[in-house]
Image (cartoon, rainbow, N blue to C red):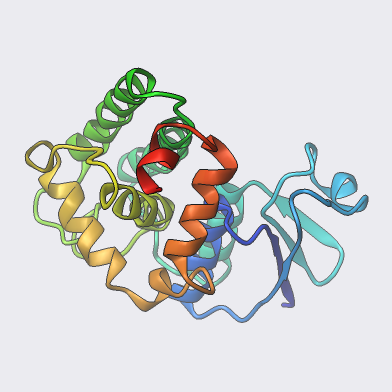
Length: 222
């Protein structure tokens, strides 16, 4: 099976697919496109011209990161989702919720001023507490001893939270101990740290400039 992943370099939703592919050791190629210069053909295979998309054998296309990750996992019997229907359902809910958390993070770095930042940061922290509530007691991953698609979905956000927290505290450690344990575990994994090429801190700086130039976080970064 020939797989080609089409992505934007800094897209967190594409990054979760890269992490899944790398963790499972699935051979693939990557095509990085410019979000400001999207090729016309992208709109023929993705409803809103969004990435990631996965091309299978050069003609069949799957869009949406959740669907792509599940396809990859199923195609190689990767075991990254529970067999029990109830557990699997909760895992899928957390994967979807990871996207909600990621969008809340985007609102944080886009905050125009401190007042807006405080409101957006409180919203993000509230959303993270839901992950904390549903995370496994023992860890070290979010769903227990083994890496899962929940971890793949949250890992890109963890990288960004870690970078942001160097600039301005964006969560209370005492409120999310399980989540922080999983964050430490995931950020130490090669498939996570290597899921974006280049200097991530520099890339993060560009993300902040792109979303919130002249805003609260951008000003703090100097």
